[in-house]
Length: 252
Image 1 (cartoon, rainbow, N blue to C red):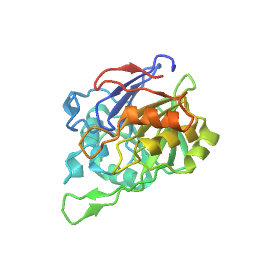
Image 2 (cartoon, rainbow, N blue to C red):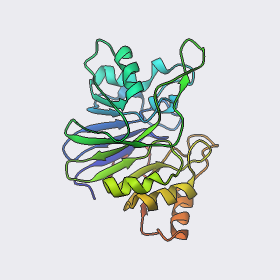
Image 3 (cartoon, rainbow, N blue to C red):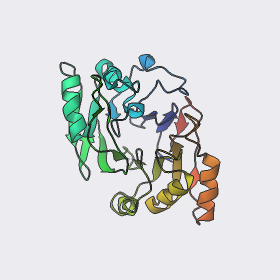
Image 4 (cartoon, rainbow, N blue to C red):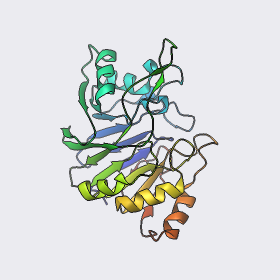
């Protein structure tokens, strides 16, 4: 168990990590999702912002306007360090001009230190554009990514972002030795339980926290299906942790 770190899930892929050292990390903060018990306007703390890709349900906006995103409004109020893939970082520099947000642009394979934590950017197999406010089509905000977050006590958390299972997850295990994985299981837009089980096995983690399920009927994968599939492939020792929405839970 990570020393003093808690995770709060606000539905979909919206997450808050509070580390043992007191750092507040927001990940893909779509507080406007229909299952969230909290509004973005209630968020007053964010030291480190991580957004995996430019889809509205991860930036935290309406499906036709990314400039009203929860992530942007929270960042303007809380002045976090925001680590983002290069193209997204360029867009953020324009959108957040005049704010005190520290934007760190990087790319897959890189590692930075932000607010005392290490952040490594890894591959995700997905897409990333969304509608521009002008309505002329998708706004390109860089490729999708995942993050390996190194906590103060040495625990490593891999947030895979929206992705399908892929062989590169074995390389993430070899290079970064993650302890806990946060990954989607809903299916249709991401891997479902069968893919997530194989991803967890390749990553070699001790525990999985499933996200990106149950928001809409089409995201039909369930934690019980994930547990069943882990057992079927000989990885039943990997614990599946399912926090209640809005409840701070110790990181396994």
